[in-house]
Image (cartoon, rainbow, N blue to C red; front, side):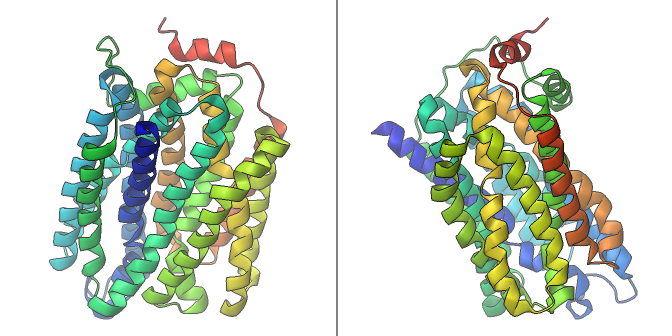
Length: 413
């Protein structure tokens, strides 16, 4: 019974964590690009505004790139629950900087906000490791599917709420909500979650461990193909997803409230697919077959968005993209977890999160230079990179050599 209660709180924690991050997405593009809001002086060009948008978007995954392996490995040594509480506290402080940044129109307060929240988001590796701790091998596909459903639901449904709050209460309101969500999250973790990992003080961690772990990922023969394809795919997924509000603004003239509805609608289909449909399909056809096909299909369907000029068609087309997206991340988590010893689940999930975070950081950081002037590139580059990730994985498929790879994870030389 305690295991079920812990799983429920972990799913809720994942939802709250990503809801707090994504609730502001409908706001950022309009905050920077609508000149009458006065965040920048009127003479600031579209290119400069796009650069700042790219910087703020990229700071979060950059910080997660370093923090996810660090916190994941630290949780292997010090216990999961304690480290999870620390990350949530860091995120809570970050959201206070967000409120100050919008209220005072301070770009540097927003920079601090994205840095701190990105550090706190390193707890995604802890949540994944705790799911692995609490799951029998035959349950992992189902449990990781529900974790991905929680992440995705929070990440995509929250902008719906954000768009509504902007329309009713103004630009500042969506920045208050994440702070209270994280405080609520802290309460539930303290109250309901049991420790899932025995403390072992022998293991050491460092903030630069992400760089070492990326090298170790390249050495894992049975998994390096999936890590590499995941990196390329995430480059495209981040480029598309994080600049989507800007694409919707220029392509269809969406207001913040309409952007929020778009995210909520897409999130509903993603949650249903990833929670119930994708795990059943993967169990039937196998992860190795499902993953590259889903990546290729995602790339094609995203790139074809450029052909949809009527926003009414968009509402029929979006569920198709979400169907294929639902297969990507829970399948990847299951494969990695199954190839990893129990005592380094946090470290392995840290590698996974670091690879994904690096992909999420690079494209938005560089893409902000030109997407302000050429928004159509958001779907072309995003879809193209997703497609490339799927082709890459199909050319270097997963190998069933888990025992050897386990040794590369735990061998300290």
